[in-house]
Image 1 (cartoon, helix red, strand yellow):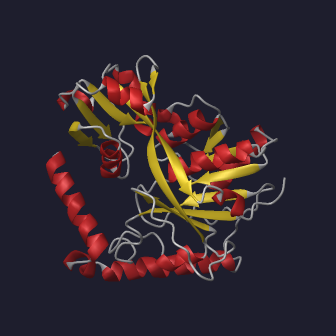
Image 2: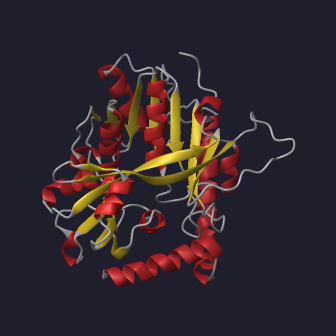
Length: 350
C-alpha cells in the first residue's frame, strides 16, 4: 500500500475512533461483542474458572487500554530504574511482539538481538541492564526468568494488562492525551477494554505534550485510587549510531544550526515524536512515519534528503546494520508529576 494512502486511512480511522462517525457507528455491534467477550473473560478468571499463576515475587504490570503506542516503554524503563535505585532486583517480561519465539521463552541480559527478542525488549534490556524474558505466555516468560535469575525479587511485565493468566500486585495504565477516544471497543473504537477499567488500576499515567499547571483539588487524597500521573518526554541526549558519539541537546542543536535535519520513526505515534523534537527547537525539513515495529530489512531513509536523520532508540535496535552515517538516535527521557509517584504505589516491602 502506498505510504500516502496508508497515512490517509490512518487519519480517517483515528478521526472515527476519537469523534465517532459513520464507520464507527456501523461497527458498534462488533464493539459490543468485544465488550461482552472481555466481561466474560474477566469473570471467568475472577471465579477461578480459568487458571492463573501467582509468582513468588511481586508483579507490576504496565499496559494500556488504548490500542497502539501510548508510551509504555519509557514508563517500563523508568519503573525498572527506580526499583534498582531502591535496592530491588527486577526482571522484565514481555511478549516479544513480532518475533516467533517458539515453545520455550527466550531470556537473557543485554545486548539482545531485536530480531530474536523484539525491539522493545532489546531496548529495555540495554537501558536497564536487567534480565528480560519474552514469550506470548507471560507466565512462561516469568517462570523462565525466575529459574535463570533466582535472586530476582520483583517482576515488571511490559504490556500485559489483558494477560490475566498472570496475577499481579500493581497495575499501571499508560495513556496519552487521546484518553479513551470515542469510548468504544475495537473495531468501533480504539479500546481493548471498557473505559471503566481505568478505575480498577493503581495508577494512570498520561503522556502529554507539556505538564498542566498544578491545581489544588479540595478534598483530594494522595491515597486516592487510581493515582493520576502526568508524563512528558524530552530529548535526554543524542547518539551518533555509527560511532557512539554523544551530545547534549544544547550541543546537538548548536552543531545542527546550519544542517538539514529529518526525523523518522517506526513507533505507535510518530507524530508525537516529531512534535517533541520541534518543541525542543529542532527544524525538521522532512519526516518519515513508518509502521510500528518496522523491520528495517532495507534502508527506508534513502528518500530523505538530509544531513542528519533523527531516529528513536526503539528503531535504533534494528538500524545499525543499515550503515547509514546520517543516523542519530534520540534518547528520550521521561519526567513525571508527581515525581515520587512510584513510592505512592502499594509495593510490598523487600
